[in-house]
Length: 107
Image 1 (tube, rainbow, N blue to C red):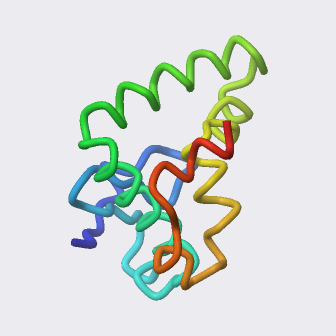
Image 2: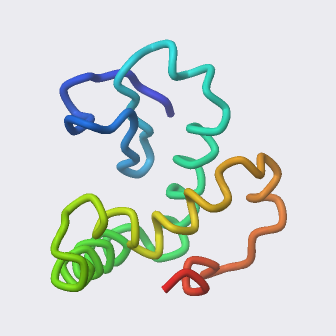
């Protein structure tokens, strides 16, 4: 389910996925198929890791990347979940052929 909330989406971002919802900062973003595909990739990642473990791994990897890069944005961009989503977001049929745990290729 896609919802619009400029209060839930963090500053500097246009969307966030918290299973089973995709929150977008602006209503017009509902038409952005690349952004929506990015967020749908996150939904798939969350489902395959049974939701709670996804968030735990996401946070752990974020802190590891933060130590590694010493920059919050670089740490975020290099989380394996984000790397997969950014790399594949323009491939609108990606979720049709995506294999389980594909984010592991982006570690």
